[in-house]
Length: 100
Image 1: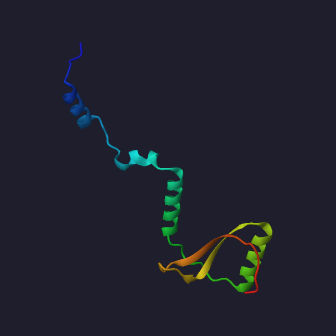
Image 2: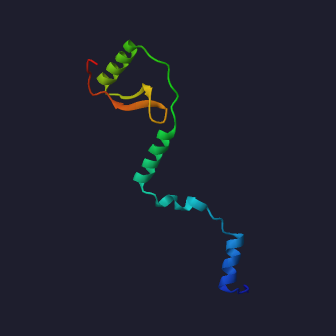
Image 3: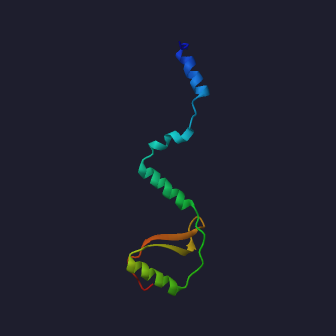
């Protein structure tokens, strides 16, 4: 027959020997999907992108025109630095063309 132990002693033994606390991992399931996607975007924005080689105006115009015709997503790296001294980037689709 099994030896009966008081509940407090049994619980103490369980937490000392068997239970492995996962720390903050156990709270991961409580995040809403909107919150996790916002966190993912925030962390992606914190990653600084390496500056790419400068392209000619003709090459830029040609690629933007192709993206406009084919309704493709573009990722444009500007020749300016943002507030964090990182290369400024734009993501989106080309909606139209202006002279400037």
